[in-house]
Image 1 (tube, helix red, strand yellow):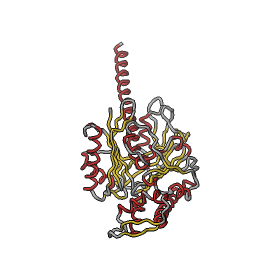
Image 2 (cartoon, rainbow, N blue to C red):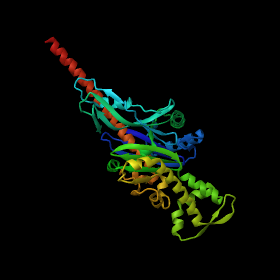
Image 3 (cartoon, helix red, strand yellow):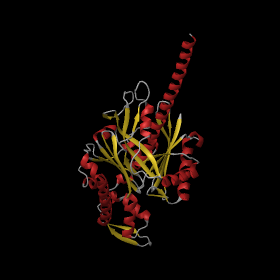
Image 4 (cartoon, rainbow, N blue to C red):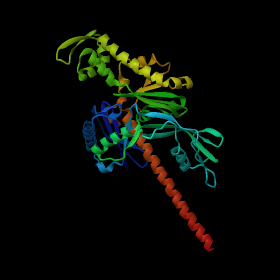
Length: 412
């Protein structure tokens, strides 16, 4: 049995899950929690002490719920977001020569060509998060999805490389080490983790855009023909709406957040004005249409920014599966109508549809899509790791068998 921990270090909340993975790959959620934390902004640590204390509290709570000990957990998967994240198209010379006798491409060959892939524009202080293959070419045959077992002389890969600042990673590692004593967590791009939860393989094949609107950041991932075309992240999440409401009506942030979260209920009540307490303690009346104006204007700004980042791909590709919106912002008032005014595509709210045992004990909303996606990513990582160990051990056994056979034949 393997035990893994997923950490969603968001700009408004920290969310943490612990899960078990049995020998067949079946998952079970053993515990989870979320706590408000303002120690990370734009994916970067701005208050080490607050981040460390909050994460430690989250972890201790979930470990106690799970009945495990800290030493039982083998892997930690952490989301990474922010404006420092850049995507690069791999260079055309990402190629290796197949030099073994039978010329059949192995899993090791595929791993080698991916690891050797490079991109123009990567700077010295880049930390590479992912090298994602879009397709492979064998000699003169392109657009091969899985070259394993095929024969050829040259194997090349069309890859998409995602990187961020080494300093961003170092500071997040310091938080995790200071709070949990873990030196080498595994970082996963936020949008890829969320996509694991709310995007299906069929949607990726047809072409789909996933938009995760979090507290601090908006994360985007665009897929076509099962491959990742583009990923991006920028500051502009739900906290900015809260801040606008607070500034415009002289409210404290808690009151502004409550107005934002409960706005649909306020609209349905039919009231044109509501009474709130200002930051100075006085009561004042606020017109409901003025609050709506703040929310709609900010989301129009967010989707306008998203469209600008995706415009090139919108012109090149047909995203037949439309747009899937997730994250805490997905629950905002008139979200679908606002998004539809910017994109001529099918638009839906992403639902966490995975029926993982134990998930029923957590209040699952779209804001949990990232941390659940980290758990799913972790399962794939563990399964692939075991598969590679098995292949290597099998090769070792085959080598020993071959040597023994050669010695017998030599003696004869």
